[in-house]
Amino acid sequence: MTCAHLSEVRPVQPRTDGCEECLEQGLQWVELRLCLTCGHVGCCNASSGRHAQAHYHATGHPLVRAFRTAHDWAYCFADSVYVDTETIDQAIQAALHHASRTRYQNQAPYFRFL
Ligand SMILES: [Zn+2]
Ligand SMILES: [Zn+2]
Ligand SMILES: [Zn+2]
Image (tube, rainbow, N blue to C red; front, side, top):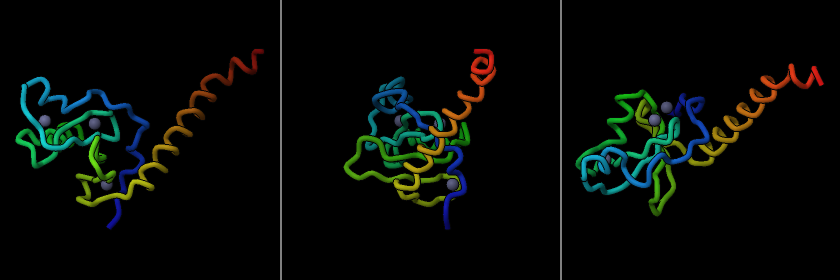
């Protein structure tokens, strides 16, 4: 089974250094997961808060990547599958490419004017 949500991947920056909700609530986490759609940082399911999964249920953002862990891997909550990080990196590149093309289209009238 493969993941059908690669179009949800964005070139995100982590919004926080640790789990956003745990930092607010003063909780401890075990490991961190980065949301690949919006940059939310949440804790894993071995942590008491399970905020990465809670973020998926709240927002529908399906894909997370291990954040500041020894091994780099990605997981889709919607499909319950691990996605290889090369595929994720390609999706990030595609999103970057799409973003620059959209910017160019937005600027096109000005180029014509010049
Ligand atoms: Zn998926
Ligand atoms: Zn948490
Ligand atoms: Zn998100």
